[in-house]
Amino acid sequence: MTLVKTTITQILIFFTMSISEAAWLSPVKLTDNYATDQVPAISGDGKRIVYYSDEDGDNDIYLLTLNGRRWSNPIKLTDNDFDDFLPDINFDGTCITYHGGEGEQRNIYSIEEKDGTWGVPGKLTDGIKRDYYPSIDHNGEKITYMARLDEGDKTYRDVYVIERKDGIWQTPLKLTSATVENIFPVMSGDGEVIAFHGRAFENADRDIYAIHSQGNQWTAPLLLTENDTTDMQTAINGDRTRIVYYWMETYQSHMTPGANAEIHLLEFRDATWQEPVPLTSTPLYEYDPTISADGKRVTFDQADGTSIEKIGIIEEKDGIWGSIEILTDSSISGFRPNINSNGDKIVFYGLGTTDSDFEIYLLEDADNAATIHGTVVKADTGEAMNGVVLETQPGRYLAGTDAGGNFTLKVLPGSYTITPQADCYQSISPVRVKGIRKGEVVELTIPLTAGNCFPSVPSNPQPQNGAQDQPRSVTLRWQGGDPDEGDEVFYDVYLGIGTEHHIEMEVVSPHQKETSYTPQGLWYDTTYYWTIVARDKEGAEKTGPRWSFTTIKASISGTIANEATGEPIKGCNVLLLSPENGMSGQTRSDAQGRYGFESLVPGQYYIFLFKKGYSVEYCLVDYGGESVTRDFTLRTAQ
Image (cartoon, rainbow, N blue to C red; front, top):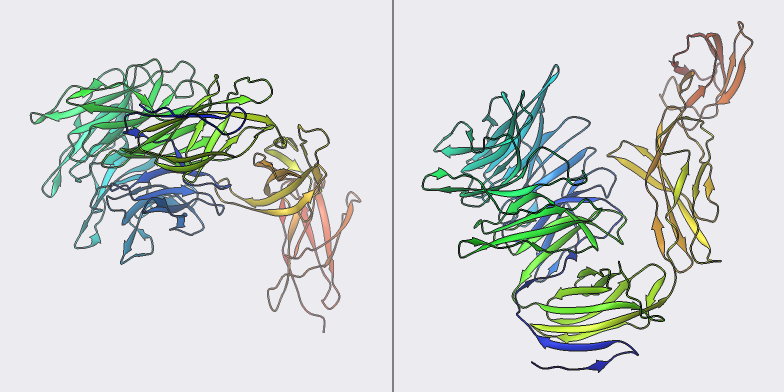
């Protein structure tokens, strides 16, 4: 063993030594934006990743491609006015399936690459039912999915399969009957077995089922577990000999304090499915398993009741399953891991402690790993710093410090600059590791000195989030500030409309100092979404949550248009008079030709319209307490 000591700064000290090379590298952040990137799937060959993101307002499918050692920027594969969710991808990454639709509607789609060009998404189901959660085989020739049909007070869920013959996707084939709710089907890599969990309507327990392909037919569902416990969320290996799922004594959410779940394994051996065996047995909640093609590596999500969930893996060697290895630390809360065929890449989505939203992350097993291990301390006192996030460039490997200020970065050989990220602290000088080699361990201490603090996250919105019946003249207010005394903070106000899944916001007031803003041109009975980005003079910024409010309904409203052209008429004077109660009002139509009156008492109202160049119009409207819509067309004056 060779020991080398080099002083970089006053208390930055390096040591190097050799260790075993094979190891899982630290997580790499593959996306970094203000969008929510979720539920990735990785191709069997480990060269492509698909996921869905709301980067442009609604959810669309995006693709990342491995070029040499670098992952590409995201490529948008779908672009429509509805949401696309939960993609899956075949072995070589040339065929992708997902479900999408507007409102409650969901259909199964596929999109393919031919000669280096991605085609137009093809709709594979008819939309009569709500079709969800597609899973595709390695060859891209079979897709299984779950269809939901609501009838009266019952919800039926069945498993379907779509097969491609002579290059054409066939009519979906129903594989189950709705005596059981059949949920989350997954396809084996060879397309010969479909695994899922189901529940009888009169039974709260969930069990594991499998359907086998026999030539041109599929068998009836085979019950693999039958007990008084909860078995759910299956994954199946490439040659259909192993199924993993998670087990609970009684159903509990992973968010429930003290909840426990285990990963269990079913194995097909001696021409039959064997009894399940537990792969994990901890007091924690292990769920959402996926399995490599050879069935020897299983990855999963581990929750312990805190806000941080970790990605774990368990591996079989020489016929014996080992202990759990945790692959992420407190710097990221990770969800929905997905492993490639070789079992050497895991992709997941996560929320890092420095992230404002979910991003896509990658874990990779390498046979030439190097290790950077160290401690982060306060420069003035030497006190260990917990919760510091460290990121490398290049590579974007991530790690976080524990209560003792310790961190470990597993990286590929090379030279790196390490950036510590801690609110109100900064490194004394750049932290550089040069020429770390395969199998080496570098030990260092990183002192941080007091520095710029991030602005406070905008909070305490007024009106409160989700508020109803707000006046069109509402003023938006929030709480801001900065921990640094005297540091100026500027705010960008974003405002827009849409639905929960399709929101289009734009900056309506940039770089303002005030913590209030009164928007102009709000309309009746409309839900508006808004958020605030706070930024200090050093460029450090924090984005607040997305809030919403809904404006008051109009008593009487409508539109005014040109009779000949149908174009809206702006600036038309609208006079309201009631001979019964003496109420009156006056307004002007906006750029969309809209007008409205609010807070009227029931009664009869005359509406008069005056606009230069147009004839005068009027009508009598009966207002009984519910909103009334009255549209007008005006003729040009003769």
